[in-house]
Image (cartoon, rainbow, N blue to C red; front, top):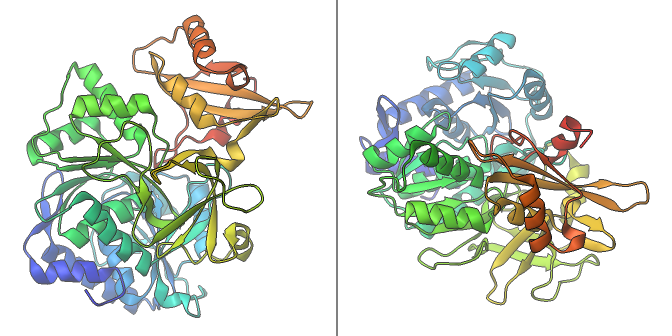
Length: 501
């Protein structure tokens, strides 16, 4: 695989085993050869529309073969794919279009009612592929110039859990490196089958699921939406061997098993279970491992570092919630408030650099300058510490850290305690500034299906398990926490939704 762009992974698979099924759909499967035909048709269409290297191509999509074909066709012509989830609102889509300034926008209309609605608003027209529509080509769109043109493969828009989303420039080199690292970490091979519901508009779906599978020649059970019943059917009937997703996915899977009265799911070929994209608490880890009969591996990654910075080691059971060790090509530091390395075991901001690091944010030099540090280090805004064996533990966000009575309170630690209480499915802890400058700790708790949270018992549990300065002043039960499409809690929305909390 000598080409430096991501489509080289697909071209190798096409050359080696053209008729091998790659994408397993609800009612059919698609071989490398069939997908290759689509990729070539779309590459020709992009060129005919005047799409040049460095142009952005917006893809308003839910998971489907057409989306995969567009990502790889963009790579072939040197354009940057900019995927956005079709279930976002018209206002959000408009903001992404303004930020990306795309030459053309595609919609996966044939497989997504939401994408079809966006296509109607954009006055979209037919594409060479029946299930796709595309907006009129924008002649005034500006192509990127300079050395970034050949380096960048895609633009991933951040989830915006703490502010306005930004367009992360993801490089071919970073995705190719992580494809190899991720495949190796799982011993992924042609006999493996992964469940692929994670949106490929997100770095988890693009890197960990799609690129690693292409590198290894593994198959994908591709779904546009998450359905617990379908997951268990794929595990039992199709023989899914790799199951990956955010903690919220596993919470929903466990809830479905409970509702169905199933103690242990039938997973005859399952051999690797992984969670990432959000903090992991011990109660969930233990529950998943008990029900699935497999270790739950964990990692730490973000859009700004293609794929993952750290992964736990396959075959090595851990009895904690560590995110593992830096992957090949990655470096990390734990830095204190002065910018110096924190002593081992002490909390600080996670800094990183390496092959997967982004070159910056799309069209936003100011935002890029805010996070880049001398020596090529990226200041993540995440808080963590290193164990004596070098394993990383992530404890929260720097901006979310609560200062209460002079003490630092890390929301993740409080959430871990709350989540271990019987009847709580998940929680979110945040601080609210008081008139004296101190911060009040608020907790929002989501009950498990059919559960009623005993608030008096919960308060007693909190007093027993948390120091006084860590205890929430208020605990607010709510039906469901607001979540991003990638499974992260939208904490900044909670105070807006519940101003009287």
